[in-house]
Length: 553
Image 1 (cartoon, one colour):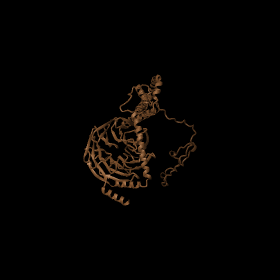
Image 2 (cartoon, helix red, strand yellow):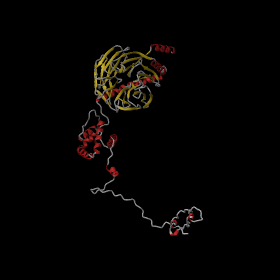
Image 3 (cartoon, one colour):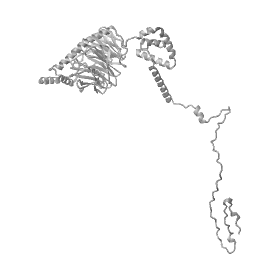
Image 4 (cartoon, helix red, strand yellow):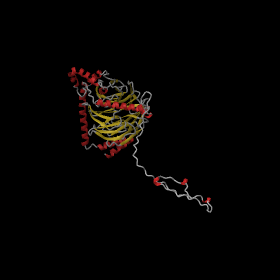
């Protein structure tokens, strides 16, 4: 049989396999039955050997040539053009933030340059340089240090603009021929020389204070060494007397809120002032009749105080003046000089001088006989509010909105102590009769006791739930301390351990001021509810105490 040529598979010569021949169909031959055809097994084709060929060159990425525009310049892609030419829009808020940052940076650079500037401290030299710069030599209400700071800022900005060299050359040419004269002018003392009247007043205050201090020390020694003097018993009796204080009487003092009160030296007259600018003198002990009505202030009255030696009183007002009156309503003196409204007023223990505080950051000392301003004292960085004189007359204390209490030596004019501790404005200060304790109260709701000998805070009283408007010691021996507050209460504290003795509640609004009589028998309080309230010890308790004391003796 011949193999079927159609079933042959041609393979390469190296691996050609011949399939077995397929027989013809048996059905076509006689004598044979039908036999199914035999299917040859399927073999996978063998792998042909891979011919050895040289390595093709490494394919490099195609180089992209930008299309050329009609003018011959290469065109950039859309992303490149956006990154180079497109400016993103910034929101208004981001622009303002950027401007603030740039301004803050500019101010910082100006401050750094200003700190490195050599600016004269003599006020005359500062004015001369401002005049050469074409700037006003002074502004309204501008002080010496503020004027010097303004010159420093101007010079720093000129330096940043590159104009300082030209300015210095001009200044050197102007100063050169007058070098000797300017040297003489710049030699000035570090203090401001006061008038002759101030020197005489300091000498008189020194003599007065020496006598008063000697009497106080002698009395303290006698009380310490005398076996008949029982200080603990006296303190206990005074605190018992204060603990029994109750509301004695109450009366409306004015149509507007009351701001201050003060007892006369004999305790027979009570003076009150109000926001209406009127000061009234009331008869004690019921404050129902007025002896006189003092009307001369053009603005609200802020404080009133009686003289410790005679029958006259002083008032302070927001019209920037203080006035001296007699008890019959006669105006004696008007003290003018403050640039802002007045806050408090106080008499020197000698009765010859008057101290006033103001929102112009100064306190001043006046001669009540001549009305002359003896001392303009700076030292607080913000408004001065409280003022008090030591009973010896040697020291004065001031407090202000800068959260400081300062102690001044009136004999030398120096600031001898600065008490830091309050975290908010200090509205009131008061000296203890012992001469070395100072109480201060302020907006932080605290009353602090300072020891002048140790130069630090002795005790912190969490006095009230609102700001402390005034603090005042009992005037005899300082057995107790009274504090008035905007929480509508007056609290009495022990002068020995500063514990709470009594809380006087009765006002319906802020308590603005208080005062204590010389014999400590009565406390007067005034409030924004327009009422005057007198607090005294009940008579039954006093009788019981006297009987107890008699039995003990």
